[in-house]
Length: 211
Picture (cartoon, one colour):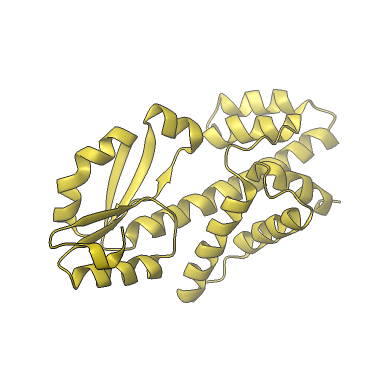
């Protein structure tokens, strides 16, 4: 829907991942027309979308959110209202940073396992049974060990999201060195033509830096 076509009381739900600043700009324009924008980016991948079990992170006017929550419940099993406009996008940025950094950590333990002559799949199974268990270790860990990078979430999209996150933290006056390392690996992977692979393909770049 174009902003110029919105009518009084319209509620626009944006489930894409864009910058918080862009979200607030659009919301301000809609508010001039007595309409609302809710930023509602998601996490859960293709499987979550197909099963209706996405995590949906919502920012914007709370009264508008309460009116459309039932719509979001069709798509997501966990819907979290985070506060003012742009809050959903900030939460999504945190999600994408955490996923990327966890992939980096898994890359490191796979390398340790191989250097120790231990089957990394067995180490993965042991870790999945303990406190280190995570969906990322379960799904991406297997991809990285078997070198099966058929995309669940493409590298190009994850990299785009990390650029948004990096700009966000820059505006906060922060310097997250770990994020910088992962983003450099993603940039390198894209230059090598891996944009359409799963984002965990950065393991093939990272493992070269451990020597």
